[in-house]
Image (cartoon, rainbow, N blue to C red; front, side, top):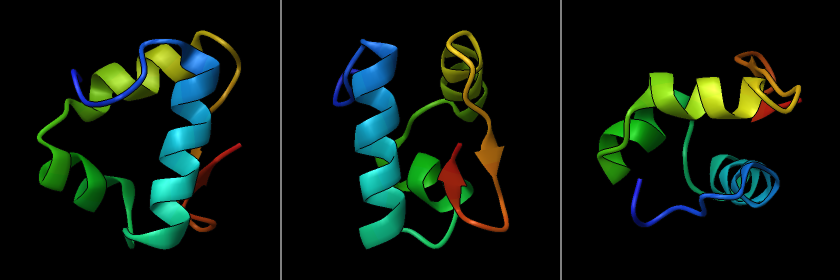
Length: 59
């Protein structure tokens, strides 16, 4: 996750922007950026966010 922010709030913002503008799913983003989806989801869950597959964003 070196290319993504470590701060969970900044990570939330960056991921939602990337999901909105460039990726059809969290799976596609994680594969393209070579990041661990479970790690991202755990980090954001720690501050109250979860991934909504239908909306393709963290809420």
